Length: 255
Image (cartoon, rainbow, N blue to C red; front, side):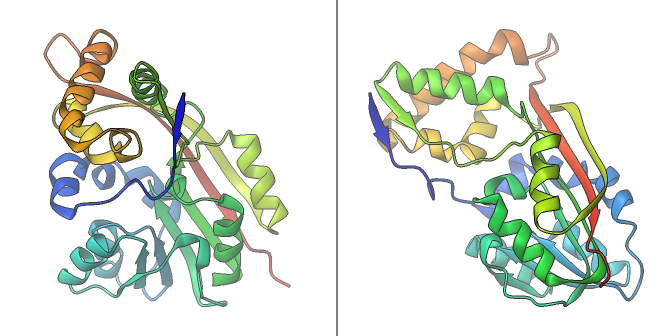
């Protein structure tokens, strides 16, 4: 079996993201409630994407900086008038700058997680909090499993570029970086999609689809769609992604 190189295969298109993935920010209400942002607080939005949540925090009166590794997403966020910067989550340059670091649906793309967590710890002032939601253990297991099987039938494989940890594993990483963990919850969240699971794969599955030539990708995606249809498509035609989320609230101790 031929192993295609990982990493960096996932790329982001702001227009495609807005059309096929707006539910990501729309479903952030719980983690935003955990954050409980206060006017005047300095907040880092880690993995800000196109700035939908960053703008909400700014409108709430917070002083927000958004960072994202994608130039396209940063450009979209800047078009909203936001302070958005193209920075890798594994290489945060901030030192004791923020009362809170917030992240929604982004940390699972940032490898290795130890480097990300260390950068978050550096960025926070003593007493500052880290509030995030990311994919947890079992996240999109059916979708990724079908993609891997489709590649295996072509004698191909890819290395995963996502990190979906268990609560115990993530707690260990946070505590090793000096955090005190107040809340950490794994939540199955089957999520209705705005369109076909094929559109989801086109938006989020580049690591898998880019393993084959461009002219073969539509057939690969359609094959996976048919495999997933019995498990993930409801009788009314709505597709349900098998999301599992990990939510965390931790703080950097004073002193």
